[in-house]
Image (cartoon, rainbow, N blue to C red):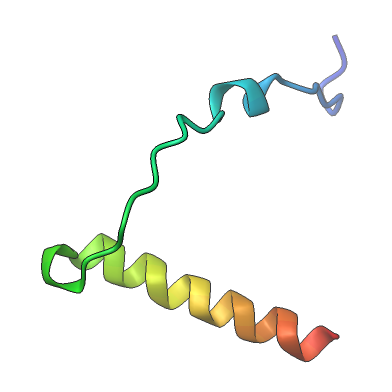
Length: 51
């Protein structure tokens, strides 16, 4: 098998939504949540500037 060959996986099947809407609560947020929120905001800003 070639070393640089890429394979498609069925990752999308593993990430199907369960249909449950989860509300974000700043009071319950831990450090990981705050960092993820900051990364998301930065990504949104980068996307907005590219348009």
